[in-house]
Length: 355
Image 1 (cartoon, one colour):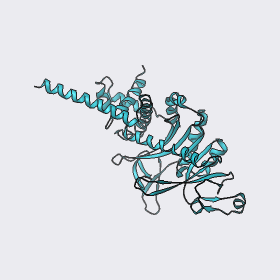
Image 2 (cartoon, one colour):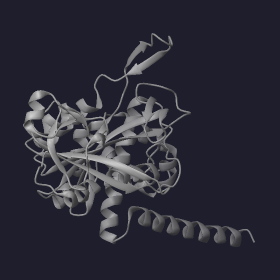
Image 3 (cartoon, helix red, strand yellow):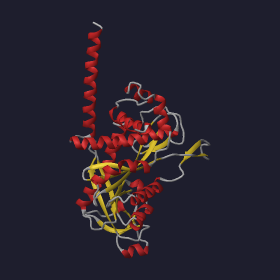
Image 4 (cartoon, one colour):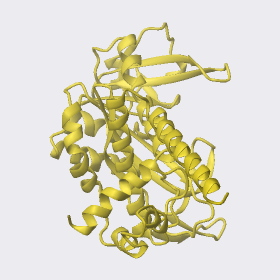
């Protein structure tokens, strides 16, 4: 077997079975030095793995779950790395979960969900290579060469090129720009089901649209059933729905949803959009179970490639968990218990040998 191919497969298994920081030395020790830490480091440096490489490695598994009713789910996640040196990959990103900018990695994922399985089919690491001086603070800041909405469109183009079957694009309000909705409807010939911010403007009939009479969606008279209308900036009719839900703390939340599939009713809208939660589960997996940020890699290439390998490790964990009839966290716990039993037995052997 090609040495890099061998390390490729071993590194994935290492991330699936690890419970703490992952290093080239750690994997080498696990293999009793059969592969040196220098060889592993060179593997992480030998090429830049891309979203296209991800597709080539997950295509077989995706084809097995693929259906015309599949959905593409877009979302990004921020993983803090406060003690790592800043570069164009590890820098300051706004994290909406905490409401502030944090130093770390920003990863945009496209998850394909179909037939009960969720697998990543594309990704984009958000890099900020452009440095500039902020006029108000005079501090040096960074920015990306593209926006996340630009990245979403490029990923959709790749999914079409890969002949992936899907029906809806699901995403939160960060990705519900007019440009994205037009692209999905006009260029992709597909449906979108997206969250909207409460200040988006809607016309309730064609005459109001032509006369420029729009109103905020949070001012509409919601009766519990979806409303048809025209969102400002688009020429196609859409269906809108206000979903009221309870937060974990007992407070009430409101979610405004929009789709170009005007045949959808309330139950269908809520059922389909519920699938968006699958990307949140995926992000929990990649952070907790496959060591997304638990590598001391120093260069942008090795850091990026470790993240790529973490994505593939999550795919392996997802596929194994489905076969075993467990959740990914349940499977990980099963591996942990087995590892702990082995350590427990090893400790007893050490005690006997020194008695």
